[in-house]
Length: 273
Image (tube, rainbow, N blue to C red; front, side, top):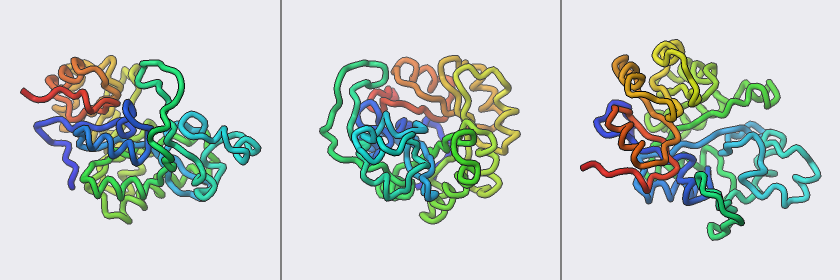
């Protein structure tokens, strides 16, 4: 399993697994993305109090777990992941799936997935390897939220897991924090890296990515143009836009030459004719 950004066919990355069909950032979401034909998945990493990388998108536990239902977490606010050890987080269920799927609002929750623990990065990478799935590891920007001493270790702790499992060739490290991207490349030159930018980004993507020694640009897709894609591709860099959920837009971006698509809906990706 080796990740190459130089491919004729764009790679399909399931966003947080397959969050349109399963609870995000869980092992079952990874397995669902695999079942729906994704080449890999994008996951989000934060640290626990004891420095263990775990999967969580938000910088608190309330939206994607049942922390509010546990007296321990109610009595020890705020529900920030880095305030608790991995053992303390192990009682949480990240498998209660809210039926607010990619903009389609509904009420209630879907409990059919049973109890899904908050996975460690190690567990997520191990299962990814078993399934032959590539992994886009987004290191969440915790620089202003987490205690500085702990925040300063998030890149190193993430890379330690990648190296322990010998998955250097199966992952790409990405972040909105350019310092994390640059640090990842300094510590692991052989690991691919990507700079995340928001939908409203108006800077020079080639210059921004090259300044960090990175390999890819991960832009929000809403304002992404064919000219911008061409400029980055002509510079020898990859372009993997997020979060592209409409099949017509997926097809357009593929025709424009992107190297990958990050989507909540890998089941809806148009098939090549």
